[in-house]
Image (cartoon, rainbow, N blue to C red; front, top):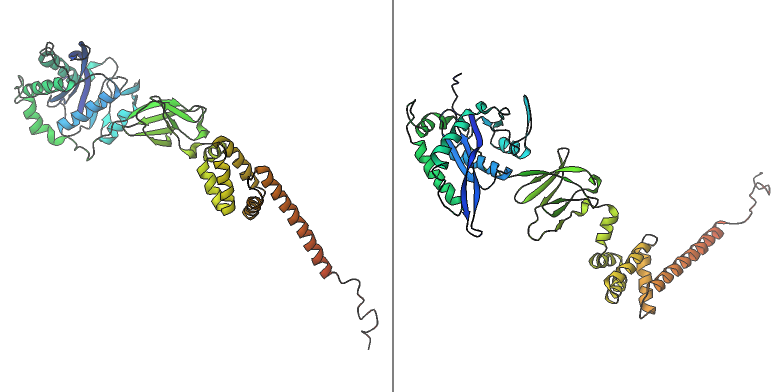
Amino acid sequence: MPIRRKPGEVLEVDWAGATLKIMDSAAGEEIEAYVFVAALPYSQYFYAEAFLDMKSRSWLTAHVHAFEYFGGVTETLVPDNLKTGITKHRRGDSQVNEAYRELADHYWTVVVPSRIRKPKDKPSAEGAVGFLSRQIIAALRNYQCFHIEDLNKEIHSRLEEMHTQEFQKRSGSRKSVFTEEESATLRPLPKTRFKMTEWRTAKVQPNYHIQVERMFYSVPYDYTREDVDVRLTANLIEIYFKDVRIASHTRLKGAIGQYSTNTDHMPDNHRLYLDHNPENNRAWARTVGTNMEKFVTYILENNVEKKALGFLAVIRNLNKKHSNDQMEAAAKSLLEVASQPTISVYKSILDRQKKKAARASVVTERSNRSKEDHGFTRGAKYFGGDKK
């Protein structure tokens, strides 16, 4: 049945079946180039570009370039059921790839995939692919180039020639119909260009990190062994669990095996271990007093770091039972009596101080009790002094 298309309503997209070749100058081998085609059914105006693969990034980039080539966006996108665009296809209910959905949301359009094995659902794209195969791909089959940019430059120059050719069964050309009737009906491009995204799934390892491209990123340790969704952009990685973002990191680059760890994602014991370093111990000593700072500095300077940190862990545990004033007073006494202060001597001083304070409190309590105790006193009533 002849169907009259509305201008600016649909953009049909597909990969051409035929491929082109570019020469790898380093290896001296031919590399296949895959041609993306986007066609407007009303004007038959179309866009074509070659890529070295048909992965998600190339698919999304091709759409962005097509929208910019047309200078606007249609109401609907009609792709084939390829995995880079459609995750699952059910009759009347198709699941769009997350990155493709983001692109459609950014450009305010809707993805309506064609039915499986139904090329008539996107006849303009199929016709453009056939036309492109005859007019461009066949003509460039012996064209030799070494860069994909050179190949696309040649494709675009031939594309312009094709668009200016007059129709055989209708007046005008593809370019004139598009310019005069369809371009004004397209939705305007957004102010910002779409940022390429990629979605993956990952499993949180027992060390509360996920691995993405051999780099490691932390998530809250509560999600250990859970499956999460990972959204990748050029500079950012976002991690989602059941559609809720639980972590984000700047994307690591360079040598493989790097870790990006947020200390808030760690369990308490891991965070304490990480914070137990010379700088933090010196900072803690300054909060106690100058004598404690001198004692801590002496330990760090006269022992290897691992051994010194063990000693300092013992001292900081003592702070749970003794106040800062008691710790500072013991450190002062230790530095006055010992030229080479040790942990054991420091602990003994703290114990003596504690016992001395306990004895002093007992004496004070007895003294207060004796002041309040006036013995057995008979009142005026006993001696009859209350009788007149």
